[in-house]
Length: 432
Ligand code: GLU
Image 1: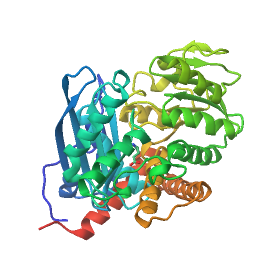
Image 2 (image 1 turned 90 degrees about the horizontal axis):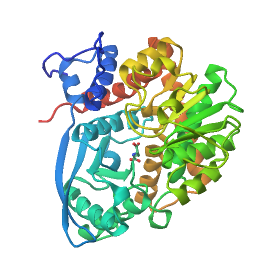
Image 3 (image 1 turned 60 degrees about the vertical axis):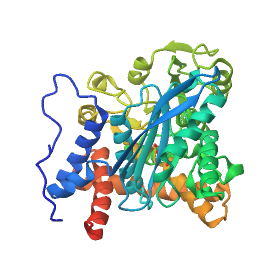
């Protein structure tokens, strides 16, 4: 492709007195490593390492006390070469534009890694949803949806849940979109309640996809999944459901945590009890029959499988060498830094990268969107079987790439994903 551009950094900087934890730069480093393997030309690299479209909106919201509060919201579309933009919406006090840009780019690679016909996008609002009432959240969600409405839609960009948003949030988004366009647009949003065109299996899909690829990784690593010990950081949608699904398949969950701290019991933790306890007390901390552990210590505790299922940058140069797990399955987006990746690979730890390990969520979002567009709905068994096929194929394609290129699983996944997006971009050509 004859696009010219300045040279871009090709590899991770060799000396890191202090690691750069800006996740947009991290996402670009990860991309650059793959671009180098693929020998992409400089112009194409510039196209793929920056978002296509960034929207920043003010979200004035009437609070329950009658006062108006203005929240900042974003929607970033990184790439639409292979299909409509796709990705979740995050509500968190720590949201930044750089974070949303990184998360949008990761969605592009994620949809390409599992080969579903979407691009990548992400949205976010800087807010503290835990301190907002349900009606405040509804008003904020509806106003945010109307602000980003010009750039979303079933053929443009399809939002979904992410950190601290759920099927109720998606129902409000779908309703707001539908009221404006004048008809019920089921395909405008995914992760909706099943009663509103949501898909069977979507709620569990991120964790189930993570389970499928971890089972395959265990076979490769010759680790017995039955009885394998599992530590899970984060007890939201992905973490809590992973605890349940891994336990059902006879792995042993020995530690779980949330934003307030963690608990462990080397004889195993009952995931159902933990979910009920968290429902009542707002945290897993203090659950009967467990001892307290910090989030930091959970990451480095003795276990076979570590599942980071919370936020970014938790596995860094600071703790990578202390990690004892044999497999890390990234249910969260961006939990591991590039320097930590290298340190872990050196020690033979297999990292199942986010764009593979948590892609079950968006894969089932794709199934939901297809069902919505066809008005023809599948059973949970059908959905899960299709998910299993997609996840296992993606795992083996990535693993094959890892052997072929002598790279760790993240770079292997990037080579696969970036290669697909690059091919689509080249064959489409540059407009005008
Ligand atoms: N937010 C999820 C993710 O990071 C799901 C995105 C989707 O279903 O579109 O993959």
